[in-house]
Image (cartoon, rainbow, N blue to C red; front, side):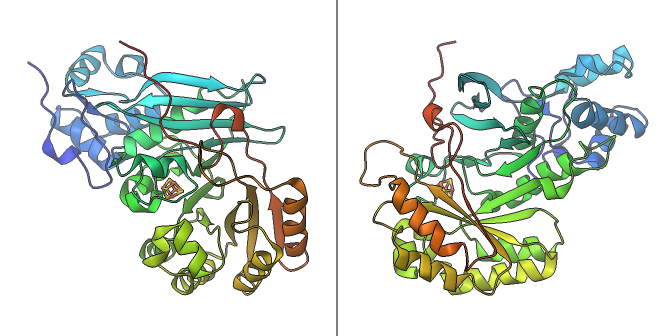
Length: 370
Ligand code: SF4
């Protein structure tokens, strides 16, 4: 007789996503929920911890691989549960394979994208938190998709676990940036749930140090405060892109709800609470926000905040009036900032040619016919 999943497992943190086949995804479920499921199946709670170890420490792709569970238990479990709910349907890679954009179909259709980036020093995974996005930032391809839905904790952590399998042999350390499709702090509980599994202590978690995780936000003030007050140790990045309310509201409608004064206060609170400096992301767009007057406003705005500024030359996303500035304009802008801000980096995104760079993710990879 099929095992009927208990209602409790569709948990607050968005884990336990139900697939079209009616089975519930084990990825993303809190450990306590896994233990209760196993108790419900007449097992001891430690079986739940064994499953968590298979999911996050060992990266099992399915229940059959969990070989220290009795065969009968694996069969019973597989009737009501599964591991993962995303399906890889597209992939684009740079010729040197250092940047890989993976298109993953969500169960009801639609594609979210995750990006693997390798440099000589580190490996970084850029993960999506939503399918589509309702914030409509003018420079962003995802924003053109409109609002979709929040991904579950399982769907978020699954992106990282899939990319982890692609690390070269012997490499275990990686970074995660929540900068893919969607606004992570709008999907707060699921994102925290997923990151909790990645940073959880082994063997039931993946053991990633919190400082290896960066959450990027357009500036949702209440959630930034919550993040600080809950004591999370993740790094925070603010998509700033303009240093005046007038321009920022044009580029990012969210600024009409949370203007710069409120955002800066929230950032200061976060810095105070966490003791971590914040990163401001500033996409440089020709003749929109890239002259030295803009740089002066930016330097004044962040003067009191321990921070780093990432200047990111605009990555094209199709027809429109935005252009990437010339090298000369990029140089003038950043050279103005360097003596005035503690740390400034000009960051050329990886994967521009394969549509994998900042602002370019749009689920635009075509799903092949099944
Ligand atoms: S930049 Fe982020 S918040 Fe803005 S539209 Fe794109 S995905 Fe949404």
